[in-house]
Length: 320
Image 1: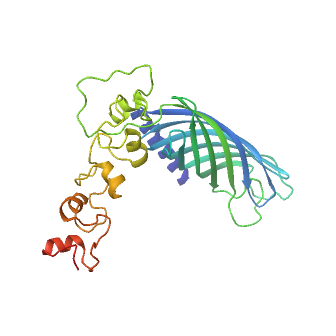
Image 2: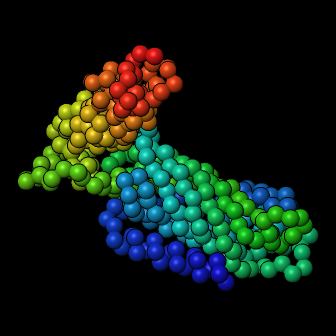
Image 3: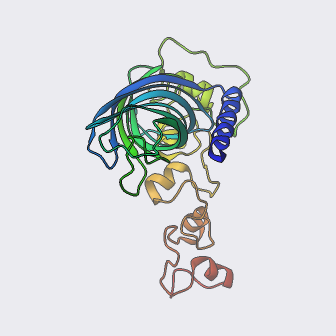
């Protein structure tokens, strides 16, 4: 079938990505599964194992396999599942790491208890393509272990997983799991600065400068100084730059507009990622230091002409 070929291709591509990357995670999870079908459904159990690899700073690819019990009043189905998920994982604070995921998978179903309203022609076993989506959060235990809470929804491309086809609509299910994830957390960020001539030694303290990033993260992922909270001296701590504002912790001015990152975030409320925050044709630095215009307003004097157009024409952007 065509969808089976697509699944095989995705698994092969993900396997290649895993082979070429070095940031690994793995773990186990278990919890509850609740089917959503045309019959009266009941809560069942589910469990799985997985491995995942970082493919970008906040992006991971996960391969997982597991079992779920598809239960209801008068029917029972075993589901053996394999999934490929794409995860976006960031952090709100040091101890809260939200996750959003979506993916593609396949499941083998086997009905071990037929319902009273069994539909003739329904397959008691077979393969089905699945689409899982969900959200979750990781809570660190230590540097290599995190508790992971996941809430998910899975759409399937079959309507007879319970043996009954009574009305239009494919069978789906919800799941709520708790698990443990082990490995390295974070992903290597491409550095825009030359490598150090000599490595900075790592002490017994996992976070010497107390900036919220471990020494290993600073040395291996972000190329920042593990002995300084603010490696580039722009007024923003390394942790805030990489986890909160997503700026470059090795550059005073991430977007090159003439304003330091801390001036943009704290003083002028401009974007440290966009050289021209208001899109008026003038970089934020020139608006603040030369023309004295508002870098967050397209037309500072409100005369209907953008600040950049006024400067280009030779008129005063501060006078109507």
